[in-house]
Image (cartoon, rainbow, N blue to C red):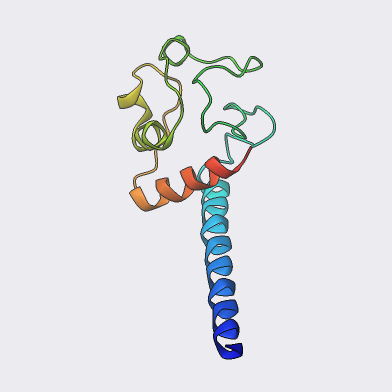
Length: 118
């Protein structure tokens, strides 16, 4: 029984470390790919992104969005964020964001990170 508890504790530690690694992967990709124009807690060239997951597109009052994004009626979830990051100009034509993330793996990590950041 004692040996089983030690094994379960070791497995739990691996799961926790793996989860932290995946989160930090998304965080580092966010820093690398997004932070030039976005911050989590204040507007830059792009709007703040803390709490973006579940938020309606174009709804941060302090940011001046394109008319196309304001009228898009998008709620940011995994699917919409993936489409946006893959090609914002294709997803919402005439939006002001031109940058995209080609790698589906990188988009997924960034989205997972944004989902956690409130």
